[in-house]
Structure formats: structure tokens, C-alpha cells
Image (cartoon, rainbow, N blue to C red; front, top):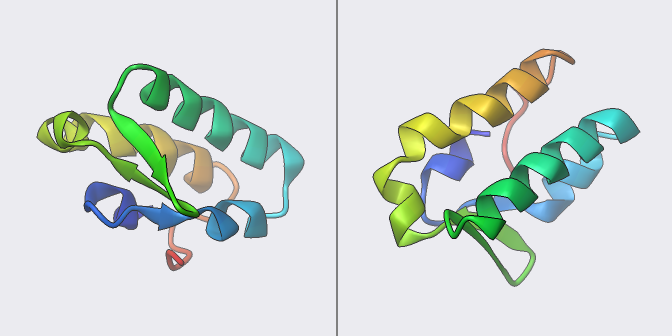
Length: 79
């Protein structure tokens, strides 16, 4: 999840590898929210912060961390 704090972002395969449908759904809902608001974008098979999103990244990534932490995935390595 820390890869989200960088311009490289995270690989979508990482999200799919979480394997829990409800976890993936919550994660994707959060991604859609930030993408719809111009704070994140999808490039190739990666999701990353936009320049605007980088400016407020400290307020974006904790929401994803909470989702992962609720299922014990918070310390899983990013792809």
C-alpha cells in the first residue's frame, strides 16, 4: 500500500492477489472515488497518484491502509 504514495503507484495484480472479494471491492471503490476526483489515475496495469493527488497523498493512502489492515494485509509487500 505504500507504493501508492509514489508516482509509480501499485500494480493491479497486487489488488487482485488479495483474494477476498469484499476486500477487493472496498479497495476498488476507494480507487474509483479518488480517480473520479482526479487524484489517482490508471496507467498500463498500475494505479497511481496524479500530480494533484501527490500534493495530498498523506490524506489519501490511510483509507487504503485501513482496508488492508482490517484483513491483516497492511504489511503485505506492494507489487
